[in-house]
Length: 133
Image 1 (spheres, helix red, strand yellow):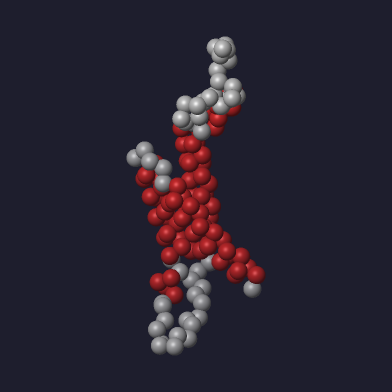
Image 2 (cartoon, one colour):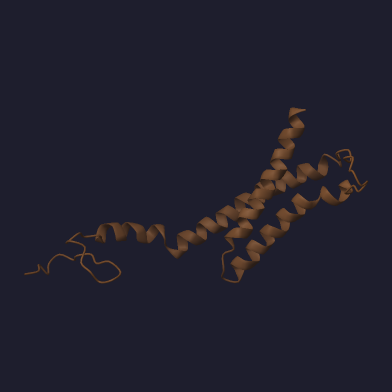
């Protein structure tokens, strides 16, 4: 006979899991995976990336245009440095803007946040490479 005083866990098929009780674990996971905590994490990530991105973009703009020498291409085609240099700062601004816009419409765009973080990493690595020269 089954003891009705204990709540037993069942898997997704409805089969009982040997009387194992998962209630305390579920209660602990509810606050961790709540919508409010997820929203706080999302907005704090965007805020942190905006602060670091603004610092990196300010440094990129204030240090002046220091372009690399054009590489010798076999066919004589070179990409102008003024076309390549603003890609990372502009991409950072656009990615963060898209993430904020999506969040204001009720959706979280984590890929845009990751893209902004990657572009900020590119800006930071260019600064480290320049400092190591």
